[in-house]
Image 1: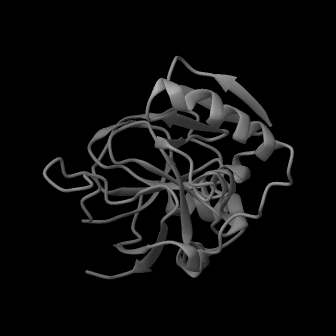
Image 2 (image 1 turned 180 degrees about the horizontal axis):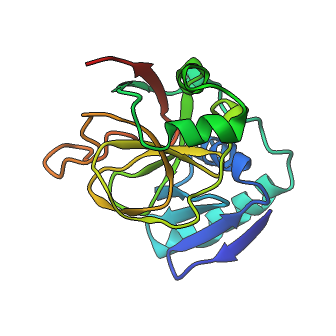
Length: 206
């Protein structure tokens, strides 16, 4: 891993594998440093200090931290779990089944069988990249992205699952839909899913 400057009040930790992100965030949070934000990415963790005087002490502590073995990622019981009901009738469900060698019912069982970790957010307000699901569900993005994906679409791509918080273009494989509200500017926090939390998908029918 590398430690890089990121302006006057922030620094960036870079890790080699996306799977290290959640463990990195949890481990740095446990250091109880004078920081205002820990913002995870696919392979990074942005650390923002409260004021300039805190920068060097935090930098030195993180240098010591990087010299130690990285703790394992937290278990599914370590964070808050959000249950999301899904109607599994997405237009790409059959294609996902064909790509994985499963049938449609087995895809649903795999998607609901394990909790998914909220690894980081991005793409759009409220969009959470979920990892640590069933490894059989690793499928590629669509060769040609859709110009419009409806809000609430539940999707898979590149080892992640996600839910489109609003209508937007997108290239993920759509396997279902939910009525859950992923982003509400009047709520605190506005995002339904926060990094370090877990999502348990549940299949429902009309």
